[in-house]
Every structure is written in C-alpha cells, then in structure tokens.
Amino acid sequence: MEETNVNAVETAQVGPQQTNTRRIIAIVLVSLFALAVLCFAGFEIKRAIERKRWIQHMKEVVDVPTFYQGIWVDDVHLGGLTFQDAKALLQEKAKEKLEKIRFDLVYGDKRWTFTYKDINAYTDWDIRIVEAYEAGRKGKLEERYNRVKEIEANGLRLQTSLFYNLDEIKDDLKAIAQEINYDPVNAEIRFYPDRKDKFEITEEKPGLFLDTDEVFNTIKQRMEKGEYGEIVLVPTEVAPQVTKADLQKLTHRIVQFSTSLEGSSADRKHNVRLALSKVNGYRLDPGEVFSFNKVVGPRTAKAGFKPAPVIMPDKSMQDDYGGGVCQASSTLYNAVLRANLEIVERYHHSFPVAYLPAGLDATVSYGGADLKFRNNRKTPVFIRTFSSGDNVYVEIYGEPFPNNGEIKCTSVVTAVVPAPEPKRILDKEGKYVKEPGGQFEYVKSRKGYKVTSYKTYYENGKKVWTEVISNDYYRPIQGIIYYRPKAEE
Image (cartoon, rainbow, N blue to C red; front, side, top):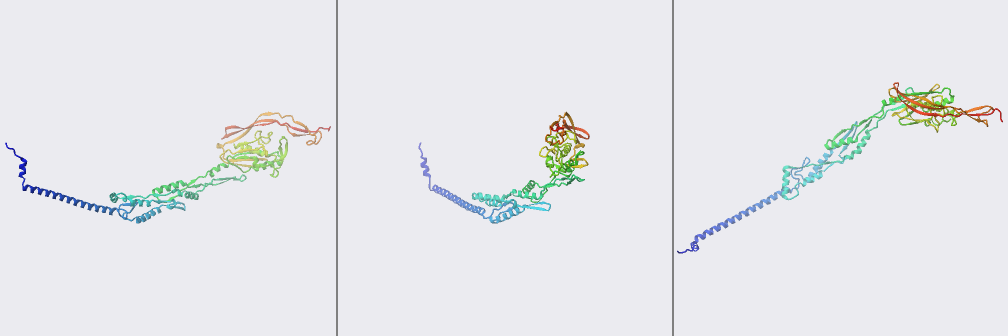
C-alpha cells in the first residue's frame, strides 16, 4: 500500500489566492488596531480636556475673594461679601446687640441705669468672622469644592456668643442699697416721775432693706434670657424690735413701798429724802446692775447731806454726815424684793432697825457696804421716789406680773440671844462723864437675833411659791458705859 505525505500535499496546495487573503486579514487587523488606538487617544485627549476644564471650574468656585454662598453669622448672610465688608457689617450688628443691653433700676422717683459697658460685655463676632471665612478654604481642591457646594446647598450658620462680667456691678448695687436702706427706729420711752403722765412714748418707725443678692440674681436671669429693660426695686420693710405697744406694758406700777420717818430729827429726814431723790427717775435696763453708793454718791456736806445719828463701827451712835441714809437704802431694798429683781449685794445692820421688821433692812456705807441689784427681766424698770408727810416712798414701774401677781415679804425670828452685860469703863479724863458719880451709855447692850426672811408670790390672790430671801444673824452687842466715881480718889 502506498503512503501519502500529507504535509507535502498541503504545502503544494497553497497558492497565490490564499496568500492574498492573509494579507487582507493582516491589514484589517492592523487597521482596526490603529483605529482603536486613535479612538483611545481621542478619548483620553477629550478626558484630559474635560478634567482640565473641571479643575478650572473648581478653582473658579473656591478661589474667590468673598464669602461663599450659604454662610451666615447670626442672622447675617455673608455670601458674596468681602472680608472687610462683612467685618463692617458684623461690627455694626454687634454694636446694635450690645446697645440693647440696658437695665433701669427704679425705686420711686430714683433711677439707676446699667449698660453693656458697666458689665464689660462683648461678643466674639471677630472670631466667628474668621471661622466663617475659613470654611471651605482648607484641604485639597476637590475637598474644598465639595465643602463649598455642601455649604451652598445646606448652609453654614455660626452663632456669636455674648460675654460679660456681672460682678462689675456688685459694688454699684451696694451703693444703691445704701441710698435706699435705712434702719428701723425703735419706739422710745421716757420717764418723768414727777409728772402726772409719767411716761412719754414715741412711735416706732419701720426700716427698709434692699437685698442686693436678689437684685443681682434678677439681673443675671434677665441677662441669660435677653430680657432687658426696667427692674422695679422692692426693698423689704424691716420691723423695729421695740414698738409703742411693747413699751406701753412698761408703764404699770409693779410695787409701791414706804417707811415712816416719824420720830426722826429734821436733819435725818432731810438725809433720807435727799438720798432717795438721787434715785428718783432711774431707768434700769435688762441685765444692768444698780449700785446705791454709785447713784447716791458720797455723803458729804458738799453733796447736801447733814449730820445725823449713824451706827459707827464700834456700834456706838454718833452724828455724821448722811445719818439716816440707810433708811433710804432699806426702803429701796424692800421695793426691789417685791419687784422680784435679783439682789446682788446686801448687808443687814448691826442690830434691827425701828422702821422695818428684822431681816428686811439694808445698810450702806460709802466706800464699804453697798446695796446692789440687777434687772433680771427682759424689759426695763423705772424707779420713782417721793415723800409725803413723814413717809418716804419707792415705786417701781415696768411690765406687770401675770394674773395680778404680787410679792409679799415676811420675816421670822428663829432665835434670840440675850444681851451681854455692858462693859463699864472708868472715864479718867472726863471725856464722856463730866460730873463725879455720873455715867454715860456709849454703846447700848442689845440682844442678838437670828432671822429668816421670805418672799411669797401670789397670782389672783393664790400663793404660787415661797422662797427664802436671807438668813441674818444680828449678833448680840455688849454695851459700853463710861462712869466716874462719886469722889475723886
């Protein structure tokens, strides 16, 4: 069987026609490729042109010397304005805003005005204008363009803030308060013991107080709300501590006490009345201590006192200036007990006196023993003294005890000590006894007494309480008798 060479046959079969076909195909392919290249090149050129135009457009949009459209500061649209124009406009708007800040504080026909200058007020428009101008001016071109378009579409609104310092007007408010404020005036009482109408009372007057903290807070709240304008000041009335009604309660006579001068010498009566006259009209305020010696003063001729019998330290009775003053202090003491004032200092005599029960006397000596008492009430008391006939009186006025209250004083002798025999002393020099066989009782022998005194308080006639005033011991006194024998030896 004969083999055939296929490749040889195929090669032998390729002729001129087939070669032309291949050339045509190649040419077509090359042409198509060239066309594609040309098309691509044209597209790229067009794209580059369009890109260049887009970039130019974006630059034209963002690179402007004015504010972008849609930018606002407060209620002012800045779009299209230059920085200088916008600055002038915002500055004017800020001024208008600040000039609206005005508070007129009014009280009666007085008026005080505060403006923005008084509180150092300002706005940050100068910061906001820079912020507004810088919007869309930072970053890459396309970022800026997109931001500008976003602002144009949606707007950018910046708000200025108001700054101020209200502390600047605190001192001014205090000064205003000083013009308005005044202290209340208490009712006052004057005591005229020798008049028929013994008390004169002046009316109280209320004060005024402006609460500057309250005014400050009102201004603060109004500033925060932007509610400017008039503020009417309403100071608070300050009530006085003491009213006329309060003082009228003090005009009641709490107690009247008297002792008798019957049997006394004219000079002794004079001394008792003079001492009490120095107490007449005395006002004793709450907590104040009365001193008899301080008020009455020294018992001297210069002070108007006269010589009269006085108990001397050796228990003898001798004339001295101010004799009888102890009756004045004792009369006052008994009135004070019945007014229930606090006894601070008191001494009894060396022996009971004739004008008062034992245990209810009060001796005094200038520079020594004193009668002192304190006003333990919450209100003043007033002392009146006077004489009528042979009686001297002490009255104490003040707020009355409740329920017709009154105090009665009593004393009880709890022990009696016999008087010792008098001591007899020979008067060799004849100082006291002038005649032979005579004698002189220089000191009288006296019994001793132990006495307890009481005060009892009654309301509507019923006993409420009893308390001890004092426990006194009048020591027995040994008398002294000077004598001379009948015949001189």
